[in-house]
Length: 108
Length: 121
Image (cartoon, rainbow over all chains, first blue to last red; front, side, top):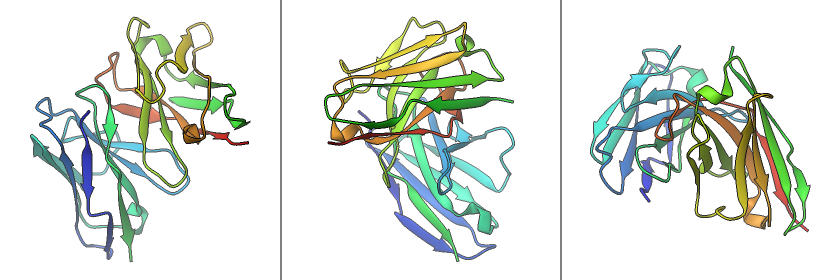
């Protein structure tokens, strides 16, 4: 199975700054079938990005993503307090589906 | 508006069984692939099982294969997960998730609020 490793484990930034989250795959996801989810405390995950870089319906353009092969990135610009959450990457191009362990984003 | 509402979680002893349900509204269940994803308390997400739009393809994680069964009832627009021979490591919040489209190789664009299954003596 494809193992996804996210870094950093925790990120602490101030409002207005930019966050860069990394997701590295143990083998190439050549299909680009990689998604990102946001999970706020006590809530279900919410789809942000799919097929590497496409924003889901209703997602702010402050969220952008890219990458290829084994290295993928989620960027959140102009951070707001409401962005505090855990962010997970998810590969759905190979069986079984797998998720990264998550990056916790704290807004100071 | 798409909504997914899970139920059926609870406390069960090791070796016991639970049947989770997920009632879908705002879309036709049999037009999309569906999945169960679990999250142990304080931990990350683990995909458990998927069923494609017509029920012709069903997939399970190795950790639950032979013990869990995914199914659905189109007339009730409801997804199920029958969980047998439960173990302590199956303790988690179980989320029902709708796939973006009809197949297994799709992301999950809507999630329910989850139901907690606790396996303990």
